[in-house]
Amino acid sequence: MPTSRRASGGPRLAVSAVGLRKSYGDKTVLDGIDLRIPAGSVFALLGPNGAGKTTTVQILSTLVPADGGRAQVAGHDVDDSPDGVRAAIGVTGQFAALDDLLTAEENLLLMADLLRLGKREGRRRARDLLERFDIAEVAHHRAATFSGGMRRRLDLAMTLVGDPRVIFLDEPTTGLDPRSRRTMWAIVRSLVADGVTVFLTTQYLEEADQLADRIAVLDGGRIVAEGSSDELKAQIPGSHVRLRFTDQDAFERASGAFPGAARDEEELALRVAGDGGLDALRTVLDRLDASGVRAADLSVHTPDLDDVFLALTGGGTTGTEDEAETGTGTGTGTGTGERPALHIEETLR
Image (cartoon, rainbow, N blue to C red; front, side, top):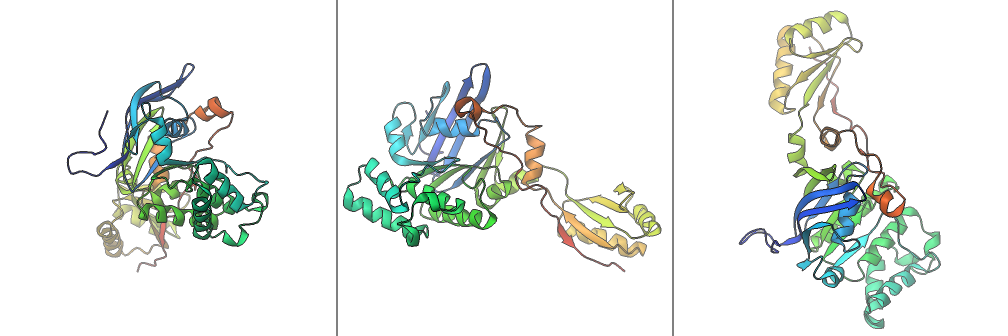
């Protein structure tokens, strides 16, 4: 089993796994995955439906056993020391685990009682968390009256009652409006600033882009790519400058200046391949200027995580490991859709 350090003098690992495998019947959900997640970081696991994201969280949080492989969480072996793992982690699932008949404060106090914190300590932590998550003003309101964003904040607050050092967030912002989602992002960043490690699965690629120090793409039960957001984007070709023209003559003259460009006859547009950097853009502008052609507008396009997701995960997977476990799916997809290009309105003379 790997130790809690990557190497002598290396960063301490909050989560490590070697060769995790899991099947449900004849369906292989995880086919031998390895993980090394440094403490005090955000790790995002992306993948289509059925890729194995939720199953990975369930194994690492001791909710289901793996069929093979080994894993450590917060220095505890998942198989040999499950109680140690549970004492060190918090788990926030896809649906808020609240008692709607209780108030926000009562939900937190109930969790404190379950963790056997004692009345005084439980009340202190409940009070602190109500303030931290900006729900102190509604502390005595029943959870049933809360909006989706408030419910998710309270759910995460309950996860923190036990002061976990590793938190698993399984699609924590699904269904939230953009403002509530950004509030959750700010909370996650504050947790990491305090040294907490966050293991995140998400259907919003922008969320992984905004939060994660490292991202792994899971497909067909295997990790097909891993790295920072920028490292993953750099693996995908497709950076280009798009030039649009208002008349056929300018379009044809520009085509002569860029003989290798892809033509869009209907839009009178050219797609000029490049790395999306300033030097490539300057070269395009110089060529246009030299040919005396005026473009109506210019757009710079660079690959984003949507492109990474689509390029690396094929067509997705039908039938999810979540359905096998709970009868429901995770609904993971490309999330935000096509990201708008960096658009530069430019008249080139």
